[in-house]
Length: 418
Image 1 (cartoon, rainbow, N blue to C red):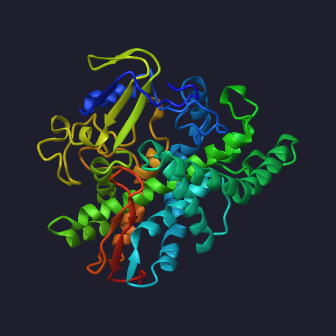
Image 2 (cartoon, one colour):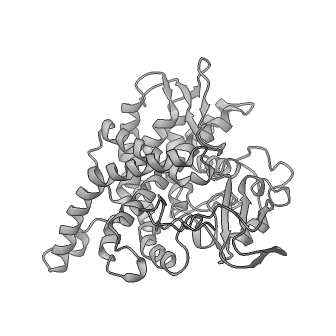
Image 3 (cartoon, one colour):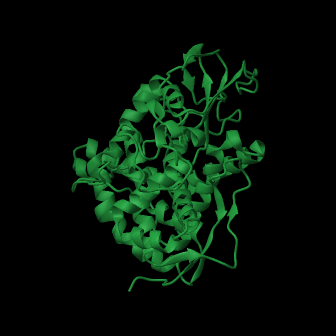
């Protein structure tokens, strides 16, 4: 650990690539996501946010924020809110038969990610594009451990936070603070308060255990949820079609997706298994510990290879490297593998993006949640998406993460639903 609080040297490096070993490591309370203990002022662009917090504050904040991911809320988004905007937005975004699929995925996802985070917008394409541009900056910050130019990322993210606070968070903050004050005075009913992350944070800001007295930390927390709900979904949408396009009968797969929402969900979960948005997770040992019989000293770097773990033949069978949405797996293993993490830092938006677990019988009841990405994949499939033979997709070269795209040109047989 350097004097500034940024961990730059490690006592050792320990890597795990087997499914069960990684799963055990994810539950180890001694393994932390915090590599930079500096303050935001001193250069830690992610200081204090829930995704890297550790210990009591992290647990307390997750308990408060998890209220926005209850099953009844997920069903509201999936069955009422999202269908109303999805196809109308696709009509505005697919204006020709040659388009870039990646920004379409982000634009679809940012609509509800903003609502859940507590960011108000007018629904215009221009404002959604502005939010997506900020999300792109936040996404580079979230992957700073894999960034090729970390210093450039820090500058970019600082500027993005400032713009985000000025143009989006402060106006939304002021509106919610006024509503909360009215409710506390008995002048407005509880149900008038928005159901979103920003409102929850403002209502609980006085709870010292949450460590939210710093305004900037609240801004970064809201940005984390906006980014997490947008970037991952956009990349997974693209990766789903990239995998289907590579199969012997892509049009047959796309036709199945278009007609069967549960199959669309299996495509998404199989995509997440093969193309985890975080291919390798990194942890720091807060204290000496042991995982799967291996001793890990304090301040060791622990690398969890999700890509390899998700292709463990002992878990996913001899065809673990293949794309197979119909694959049969053990009942206690999620179809997405390790891609949403596990333990204290399991992704809170797992069911938003990936939906509920799918039984081995492929039969679900009326309470099942398919996940918003499955709805997006199905909506795009119904418009007859095809690879663009004249343009080659490009991966994001700013990071070592191979699952990220910079652009993904496609063609559409029909640009709007008839």
